[in-house]
Image (cartoon, rainbow, N blue to C red; front, side, top):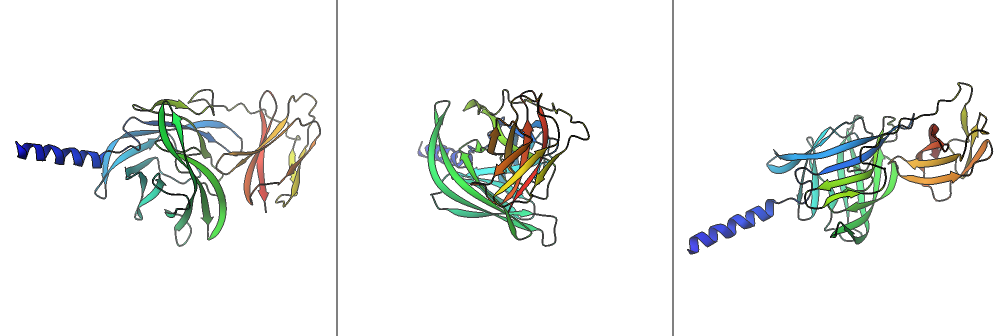
Length: 304
């Protein structure tokens, strides 16, 4: 009898160690997928397909329905969780720590990624700023707020703040970095997450998880938009080279390279729209000019 009891205990302990809270099989994320020009909005669906083994580790195989994103990630990822930490596999560099839900405020780590330029490896620096919890579908989940610093060819190009929630991951995008030399598309923010335990959670970012919008209001070729100065330090002006008389509720919305809205200018009544830097960090931003009915045009701003 004692021998049987010991075997059961060992098996139970082994199963407990191998259990993964991150990306249980069947878990699905929906993120917005936004193109800088034109500013079409589509979606990326990420799904946990099941188990696989990479470098001796039992991982979850996580698949995306499309790629072409400025994070430079492949269509399929090998990921695993252990001791409240989530790792992903980077070819030839090994497993990289993506999230750490056991971290304390002030904790830091580095993520190493392949790049195409000579030397080939970039380092993303992560710092945990503060901790909290939230309740989603009656479950209490850990949260930490962090800062990502993304270099490009040795120069810092992005210093962004993120919200990372247990089970869901970063609320911008699962891999929350983009490079400024990319004009393909950027992922995020998170629209929906669903798994068998937590159920469906809709963040409210879109009317439905798979919403798409490609309704671009085409301008006459002579109807141009110009920005001066660009780059700018404190203030720049967007010049609208077309009549705004029949454009109701014009507004300009600015997004950072992670797709996060950082500024909104509403009630535009003139053809010159001033944009004040205020608390914007140095870097690249995308502006979107909207009317009540549709998206009109987009472009890029650079803050020095």
